[in-house]
Amino acid sequence: MLSTNRRFVRGAVVTAAATTSLLLAGGLASAHVTANVYGDPPEQGGYGAVALRVPNEEQEVGTTKVEVTLPAEYGITTARTKPVAGWTAEVSKDDDVVTAVTWTAEDGHEIAAGTASYEEFELVLGSLPEDVDTMVLPAAQTYSDGTVVNWDEDPTTGDEPERPAPVVELAASSGDGHGHGGAGAAEEDTGSADSASDADSGDSADETARWLGGVGLALGALGFGLGVGATLRARKAGRS
Image (cartoon, rainbow, N blue to C red; front, side, top):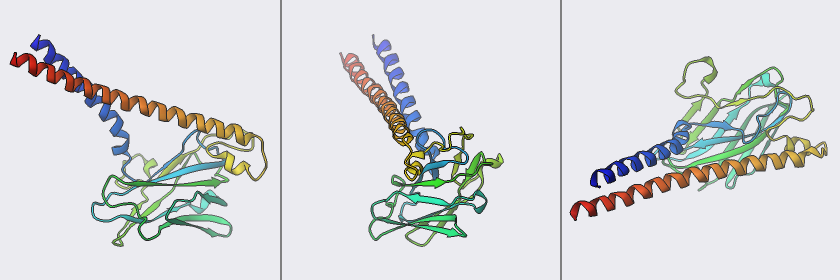
């Protein structure tokens, strides 16, 4: 019986550890500035909603400014930012082409020091280039002590860079004149009735992602609970 309990304990611990590792792997792998698209990838020639995720990586200082560069060759003419509490956003242009978007923290609103904090800065870009499969968006992260970290190394060259630039994958144009990945914000100007269905699709994808995340957390907690319970039973059996 004791041997069986020990085997059960080992199995439960391994299961819980594996589940936890899977849940944490995404966070550890993305401990740099990334550009995330929630929902379908934006289409070439359309509009796309991008969430720039910025984790703080310094133990002693917080992040006070974030700047993302939009290469001029992409020819993006529109950039709309979603308000972030305690931060101001500035869109820079050159000859009607968007060249950069900069977010600056107000006093007391920086991304907190330590490696457990992050912020997301959302924006809608368009129209997106028609001849590019992957947009590379170099970013600069400024800390409260004045240190600037540049995330500007092209990760599409085949080598794994130390400070990779955020990237956005583009889908081929569907030919409907709108595009995905935040098309609703762009269609707002045209009065298209498709915007409601696009928003519903995005909400459904978000709900599914949250549900799957909840299931993963529940499995991890269950595995941990089973392991602890089995350990206690094994100890009692050993003493008896």
